[in-house]
Length: 283
Image (cartoon, rainbow, N blue to C red; front, side, top):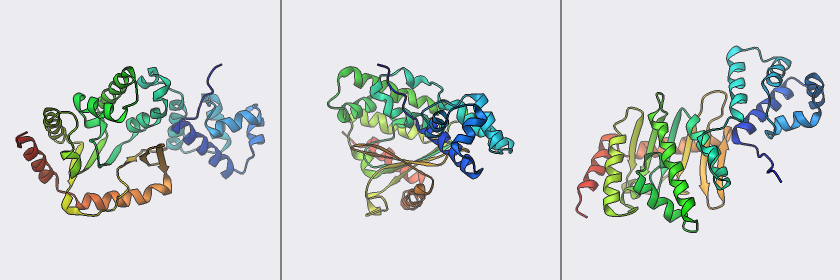
């Protein structure tokens, strides 16, 4: 039996925008269906993000809803076309399906504000550090899964080599620098790699020192993705039961927390000095 197609993050966004446009225009699902010569179930699936909207239907709905602004139309058309596009990650097993939304979100964001308290962000990890981290987290998985997870993580890092890489604001709790992942040699190489990456003009690295004491995110790490129109900003939080994606008004508290944490952190040059000192410490 074929697996039912599940809604992706971007398909849900498109569906929600179509529903908002329809409701603003005062039209019912039935009226839209009659205009498109589609049944109500198909229009409902458009709005629930579980059925692809073909280009002619998308253009017709934008006309019907009176979307005349050229930039708005172009952005919505681009969103529609991206919904069902495949990417390099689609070749991986179903075990990685739940991570696809995150990979797409990471690649789409124009700016990432990352706060980490246990491990370095995946985009900044060396291969040996990543391997040790994945093996610790995926302790109950088979070797092939571990190897595929490592491959995915390293593939994601190609984002940094794009002509237009996103701005990365990296905020690390000081404990991340002291937590040994792999051997002492692996950690030295990782910290040296981190220093090199921090020299990139789009990467801004700071350390939240122990001396900052209690702070605004006692719950731990989170990632704030700044998106371009028509996408909403998104906050990503990992939990033992899966990831949470917070959007729109739910992102404001995280943005405020991040700004306060950033203000309490060491300046970039001070952070680099701390990392350099750790590299030079004897094993």
